[in-house]
Amino acid sequence: MIQKTKRSIRWVIGKIKKDKLKYAGIHLIADFWNGKIIEDAKEIEKILIEAAKAGGNTPLKVVIHKFLPQGITGVVLLAESHIALHSWPEMNYLAIDIFTCGERASPDKTLNFLREKFQPKKTEVKKIRRGIL
Image (cartoon, rainbow, N blue to C red; front, side, top):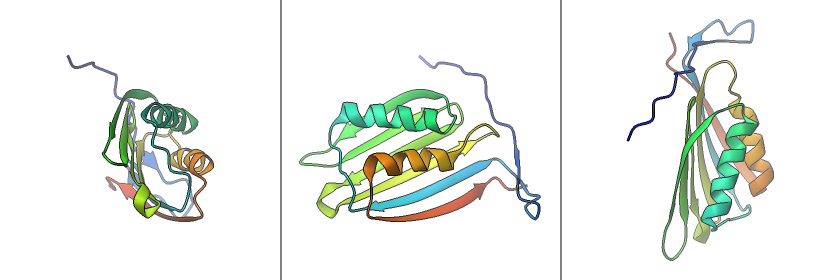
């Protein structure tokens, strides 16, 4: 059964003076290297929900898949879009995808929360404005 939720998207207007663009949302793509690797599905679910709330988002549903012999994929569907993570413990690597829309959501706060939890030694982040008008 599909649950219906009121859409919370409002086009975001750039907050920096020179950034007068309107866009649907911000998409952060982050690579975490040599941090804490968590293989516990329940703990990943808890982290994803807390990360969503830290960024001012509304979590709707969480799906976690554990791979054998190792690795985990977790996605939290948000009223404002989604957060996903994919781990490769054998490479000490965690891929993170944060896409949020609306003026309340703060993907940077979500990312900072995840940095605190996973404590990577090296981080690479790409920031993309989605749906530029």
